[in-house]
Image (cartoon, rainbow, N blue to C red; front, side, top):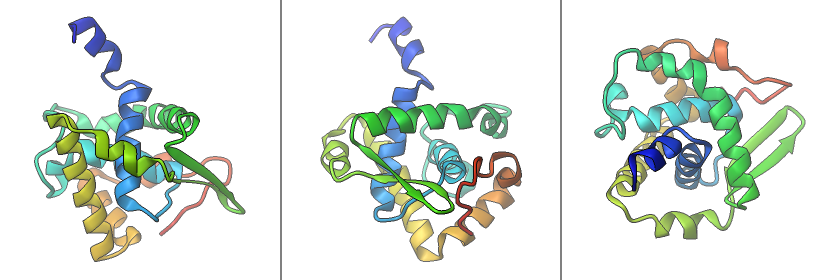
Length: 163
């Protein structure tokens, strides 16, 4: 892969979309709103920051600030993966929730590169942490590590606030 191609893929809707599919598949049958997916995308990339396995991406100064620009990227990535039939969007009275589609499991299983295997390990860790307590406790613990993301990235247009 050329440097130019890598530059177009890094932090693109495709890369973030693949992360979203992997995370949602590991969380199955859990559904998340957009603000939760923004947090989960940040955590899956920086798991070591919050007591998890080695991070997918290197430590860079100011990475907490990534949350400020991540929302739009995650929103676009979820839309892309929905069009690829790997993510489902459920409308509920409180807003929109996202979940892995039935096709997501087969897709995730096909991902075999070293990066993909590390991504799956990080997503598995997140899912285990959420299941050990609950989503609200997990989010509270993440707020302790990276600040109160919920105020800045809360649901828009009546989205669901779970926890």
